[in-house]
Image (cartoon, rainbow, N blue to C red):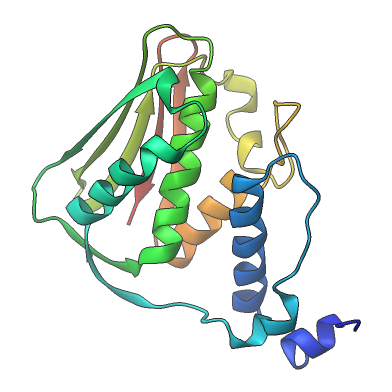
Length: 197
């Protein structure tokens, strides 16, 4: 049975509906980057929750990523370390969306280290300018200065197998949390993605 977008959204889609749709597409592509998009979830889309913000402990969030890390493709290419200071750091956020951001950034860091015999990834959380921040830091190939902002443009990718939507969606998630997602890189030495709340 064909399901139209009008059926799915019960009318005109709101920005929140569109973000949720992109989140679900992104989650699918992160697991299956080389497969076509099958929007099998569309018939039930209008039953999905839009946002569930609550107080979440960053330390618990990082622990969850640590548990998930062994399931990531090529996880043996880089050693993962996490740090949270202060240890009781909290943010008011949608846990699912923020987790998706972190997973995307960590997977990108892994891909940047695929040819690095001494790959390292650090997730460091703390306070910067009186605002909570989570940084994903890696010592992979890095990003050239001329494309540092282009990487956030939808469908821009430097990888043959990439889909180019993960960073765009991650930045949008952070903006909807009243924060930002930034990047800085010294190619061949260090790349830092900062999630500021």
